[in-house]
Length: 142
Image (cartoon, rainbow, N blue to C red; front, top):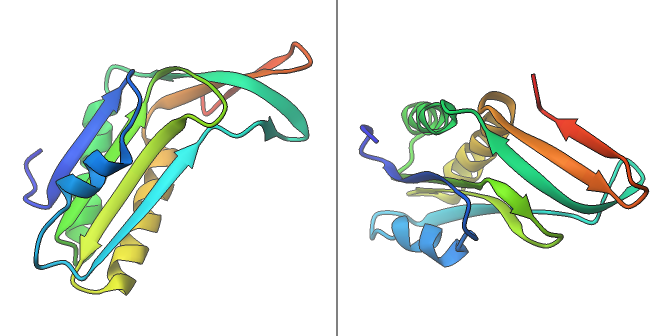
C-alpha cells in the first residue's frame, strides 16, 4: 500500500470485522466516515439462495489495492479501507466492507460509493451462488 490514505486493503477467508475497518480509519482530521457492509442475502433473481463461494484471481489483491489508490487520488479523503471475503459464506455473512474518511461527509459518501462500485466492476472476484432448487450460478466470472 503505497498511498498514504490507504489504511486497510485485504482479501480474507476468515470472517470480516466491521470494527477493525472503522478502527483502521480512526483519525482526528476526519469529520465523516462512511461505511458499506455487503452481506450474503437469502435470495437473488427470484430464487432462494442457500449459500455461496467467492473465488479470487491471484491478481485480485493487487487490483483491489490499485482501485483503492485511484479512489484516494480522485477524492479528497484522509483514509480508504476495503476488505473482501473469499471462500464459503452463509446467509448473513459479511462479504465485503469498504469505508472512507474525509473532512466532510459529502466527499466520504461519494468516495465510498465510487469505491464499492469500482471494486465490484474491476476486481477479479467471482461469486458462485447455490440456490434452494438445486441450481447454481457464477456471477462476475470471465
